[in-house]
Amino acid sequence: MTKYTFKPTDFKAFTVDGLNARMEALNEHVRPQLNNLGDYFAQYLETATGEIFYPHVAKHARRSVNPPKDTWVAFATNNRGYKMQPHFQIGLFENQLFVMYGVMHEAKDKAQQVQVFEDHFETLKLLPSDYSVSLDHMSQEKTYIHDMTDEDLLKAFKRVKNVKKGEFFVARTLAPNSEHLKSDKVFLAYLEDTFEQLLKFYK
Image (cartoon, rainbow, N blue to C red; front, side, top):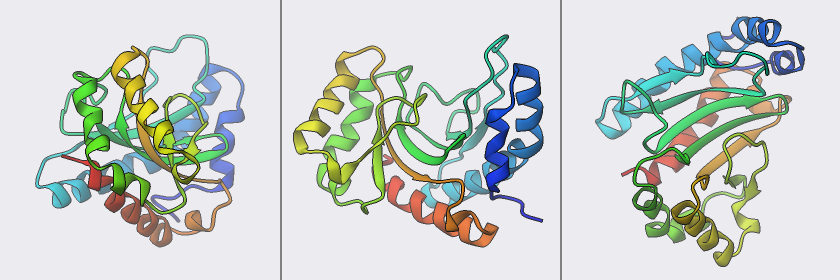
């Protein structure tokens, strides 16, 4: 019995029609792992940074009609919420598991917060080839960093500063049938390696 990883069938929870039925499927097949990952990586991040991190598992409580197309656990040093500060996420869409760190459009002082990526511009460009950029946390669409020019990245930073909806996340993704999801041991090793890279941008 696995505690942390996801089977291809778990991703199928996002194909269930109707808000209540999909939430039931997510609560049964996805949320237990997110809770466990939350506990594990809150401790991991505390050990790595010396700061206390709190896991925030998505509840989707405000939804009344549309079923969620993704779900996640976010990590931040604020116990009351995570959206206002740079934060880490582990989450799923129907066809993608993602691990991210960055700045959401609701963040305070976005211009200042995205500056850390500019300050570590060369580090960003030197990340392994499977790292990407997400400009919208609600979309599966991400662009590999090695496919982006310096101008593309600078334009993305500028958008965060000047556009209300502007966001910037460094991400790494897996397909539902990925070898990295075959066991808890392999999955946790993948996640720890990813967090190690993402922590380069954590102040």
